Image 1: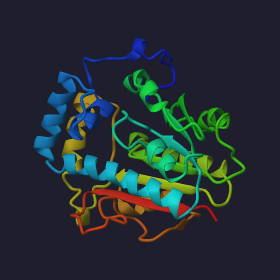
Image 2: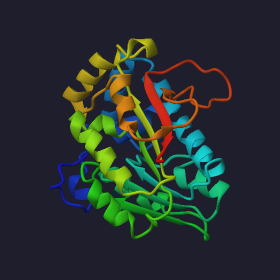
Image 3: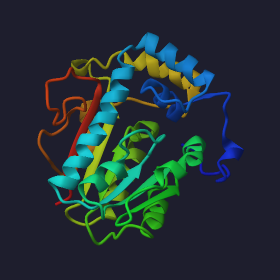
Image 4: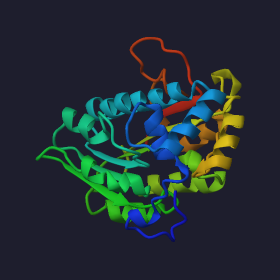
Length: 269
């Protein structure tokens, strides 16, 4: 995430000499939108913490199941996807509009390489709307203001925060961001969230040295949190089955191994 003072043009702040999360994540899930420096840091982190590729894929698979569930079973037709990342197959709008062609999706990111690829995201159904805004997770009010040009905040919205609050290092700030976003959406809205954990019961101890290496060699800095702290992001919401679990196991059709990344979906009463 930028500091809010960088130019919005994209190319002016595109630094290909330092590994960047969106590109390394893209490398881990088998994408092509990355540079040699991203591959080198990605390999180093994967050497220290081999399960990281499984986490990346599990998080992506969770997105597919969660969007389908929220659209099909919960009837939500609006999605605010914060921290979009680089487009791959089955992006949020493709899954949602497959279920309901009139779904409206707003993607939010401020990563320059994601901005370069925004046009790839901006293709949806004729019946629905797919929009993209350049905004920082640290500024939830700006996100809501810009997203309101596309989404109707008097109707339920699925606020999607997959692997994004781990880049908000201050815990109180992270909780305040969630509170501000959820305050802007009505009853029946959903919070869809994943977050890395260092909890040992999910095998998360290895996150700590791997994230230390990351923070010394890549950008932006990242943090893991305890399950207790992650669960508090859902305060005031009603968790939907199966509650907060490893994202690989959330409504999964088989019984996959757990990864140290929690995932959950909850509804605003």
